[in-house]
Image (cartoon, rainbow, N blue to C red; front, top):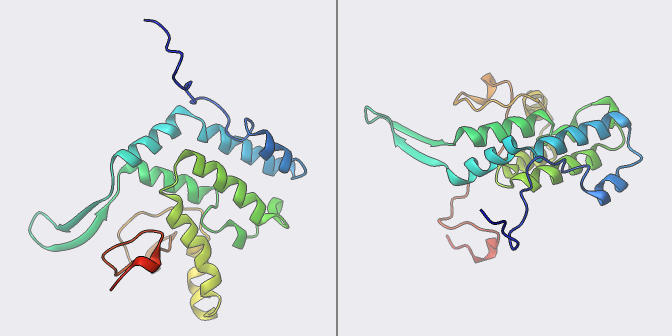
Length: 194
């Protein structure tokens, strides 16, 4: 079979962090332990396995199940296992709330370190980063209610992703999201009507 000259090369099997000269330069003064974490995450982002998870998550959109097999009300949105695998990875590396934790090697550069991990993750797949970002941002909003924050903070900052359908108080880890009541969504919220 003849080689095609007008196709992009396969991008699997590379290190997304180490292959980004600007990112490597900008982070060059960070502690070795943090850089090693970036390199490990970059290797995962560039791996065929991670890229396959991203493909599967995008080819299999969420499905609304309103009723169970007996006809009882469910109102459950089912996500493909690949989506949950991406979420598990994102939570495990702190994209959900690492700036609010006390990870010793990131003291003084939490926002920068999260930003690098977030950028690398978005190179792989963007859809699952929305709930991770909303969880990250929720802490600042919850700070206006210290009693609520005290109760929720350990589960929000957890590095354990819990996709189960249980009450928030019984979960080991939480992600925070929002629901729109408008019939239409999108980035131009000004165009919405109710």
